[in-house]
Image 1: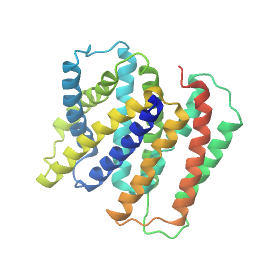
Image 2: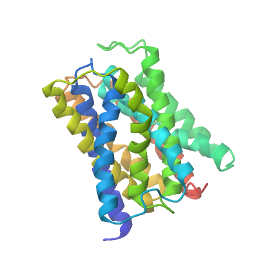
Image 3: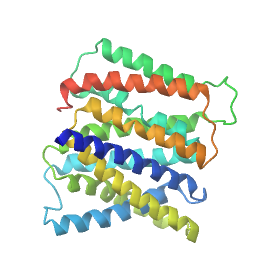
Image 4: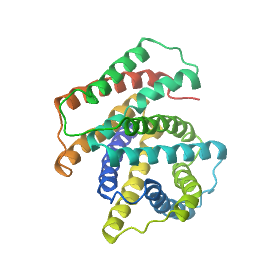
Length: 289
């Protein structure tokens, strides 16, 4: 089996584990703050990754520390936004918005790697945003009411994810994958500890099970994602990652009793097409910053 085939399977597993993580987030009592959930997740991941790095005798601080720190900050912001949107909107819709990040990558590529705006980018933007408008159509008959602030936070999560994605692609060519993974929770723990310490809310026993699930599934998903991104072209990586939308929709229907509307199906197809078009554009550059 070729290396690229292994990477495709890595990304499939990453999508599955990340989708299971979203289930755990949505199951936790709403009284526990989002920053506390991100902190718990980060502590869990930091411990596991640090043990792996020590056993493998890898330099624990990496080479490009400034870029690793930026990746950690972006990841922390993205995760808080993602957790917030998962808690406050249907799982299927929050997942679709999160997976607009390849379109944002195309936009940032114009500024970060000096790409010209071409027909692919324009087409991807039009199709992708048309899909989002169809999904979030305020005039459709639905049992869900999503406030504008929650939608805004969901898109901030997608934007910061896209920036983190670009940095991971660059770092994966010079850093060990476990160093890249480690800096994410390390920065999260350092930045969130003062907030968690001064605003601590003790989780109930039933919530601890889901919190542990967040740690396990996110760690597994992050590991498989980093492995998958290392050698796979951006176009294939983004389209495979979109499997999380399917997983999220399944969990939303069978676990949380969400309704999948025709608007959602049509809109999701449009977003997927926009993702594929924008990612095919990225394949030419391979995100070389």
